[in-house]
Image (cartoon, rainbow, N blue to C red; front, side):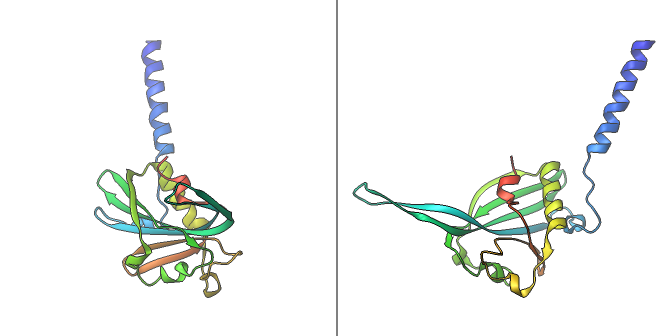
Amino acid sequence: MRKLFLIAFVVSCSLLQAQIDSLIIPANSILKDLKVGDSLTYYQCHVEEATQQLSTVSGQTLTGTQQKYTITEKYVVKKIASGYTADYYAASLAVFPNRKFSALKIREKPYWGFKKEKEFVLTDKDLKYLIALEKKGKEAIEYDYAITKYNTNQLIIRQGKNFKQLVIDGNYILSKLLGK
């Protein structure tokens, strides 16, 4: 009898923990209104310090000085019956500063050169990151559109013609957080 009670207790505790751990998307999140088949596009422009290396045809390697470069990444998040998937795209490095942030509001251009890198299923942890960044970001103003040394990380969330352009303080980069 005690074994049966103990088994029932363990099962009920594990079910309770599963309910606690399950993801609840807040009502003010852009993810809340997605229906099966809908998608959101997340663009993140951020600045990284890097050293450029060039290799010549003769086999010589030339190393430049450390500079700041902008990287633009794109995630297409799709709602499916069993959860969410993401397609990850990255664009080539562009010399700092550039004006991609303001252009993302209008429409994506082919010369941005996005290349699909991978496709994966988003976990609850990944979705929590997306929700947290949406909460953490502050709405961009016109001053924030150009990339400067004071403005190095922005997230743009688009669904059709609707978008949110958010300035993200700190080093919160989607490609370092998602799909791990």
